[in-house]
Image (tube, rainbow, N blue to C red; front, side, top):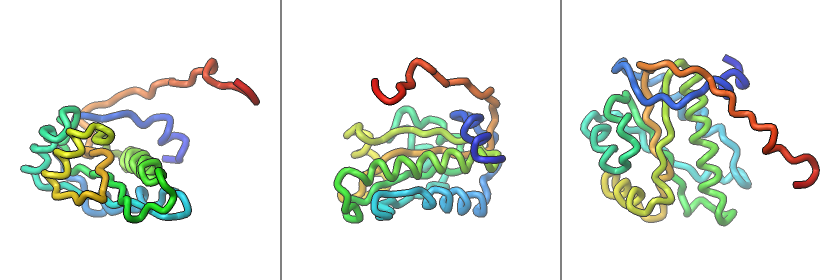
Length: 169
């Protein structure tokens, strides 16, 4: 699948078949995540890979919108390390790009995934810190459940010409 096709056909998948995501697929997804650009090439990211069924089941307690993790083969928590941030305020932006790369890589591999936000909700961030022993200098940005899809969604045309402004507003 080429990049444009992956971008245009990716959808949020919340239902998974139960087939395991392979270690090779997880590694490929993480390599894609770490291929993201970052301010001054700081690469301020860390990733928590969650495969333990008990922890996957508890993820919805951390984030009520992350219920798909219960059926996922794996979840990846994208985290920003403030100690690696030299360009103030950029670590979270950089990690958002990692998250999108994860979604696109999963889709390109024939897997399904969905972004579930933690940050900026203080309660969700705090819950994630406690469940996954995340240090204070690390901001857990999102949890991305991943699995083999048990649902199909047609691509959506989200192009809105009225939102494009040439040269000026």
